[in-house]
Picture (tube, rainbow, N blue to C red):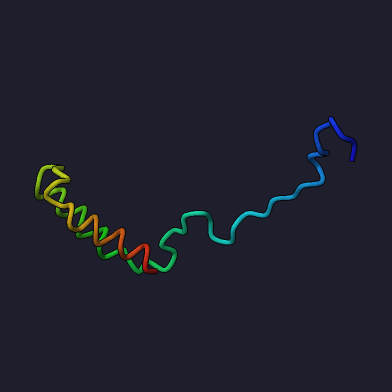
Length: 65
C-alpha cells in the first residue's frame, strides 16, 4: 500500500446478507394481518387513519418474526 494513494478497491469484497437488510415475510407468517389491513382500507375508503392499529400489528409481527 502506498501512502497518499487511495486503496485498491478490488481488494475489498462485500458479501450481501442472506435474506437482505430488511427480511421479507418469506414464510407468510404475517400475511393474515396484511389481508385484514387491505380489507380495512377498502371499507374505510382508503383512510389509513382508521386502520392504523392493523398497520401497527403487522409491523410488530414483522419485527418479532
